[in-house]
Image: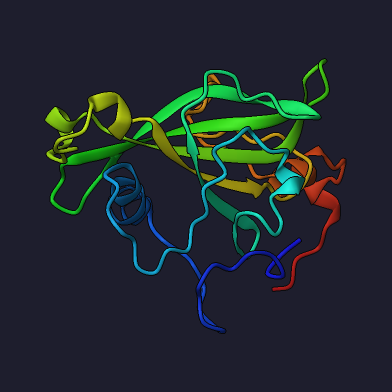
Length: 196
């Protein structure tokens, strides 16, 4: 995988690296409001959920991330597994401090037994027009909020890392996979000589 897939209408050398705010305001809001997006680079894959490895060549590829529009679906069952919600929702604010969207997290699970993988998805949703200040003029509310923008990526390493809030009883700090590996080693610091 990588940069060999669908790159939209991006000229060579350009990298798609938007902030959450930009994804919601400049792409998702325009899609949901049926406004033109120039350039139109994020494809619509709204027919059914895709396995993450099927996105190459279909979704906008930028490094190890894939972007696409979809319609809101209750169940995200794919050919080989399903996207499991992580019950984490984060608000997205614009520079003026106004809430403009919501980000939800999912992990991809293989097979009917639901073995978690390193594949993650962030779903971007628009806020209701009352709370965000955005409107879907002359459209039903359901039309405006039926669209989502998805960002799919594969986490590094094989450790399952917490996303969003930590549920540990410690001071709230998270260890990376590398930190966990070093802490699990049986080295005794007294046996190590440090330079003066």
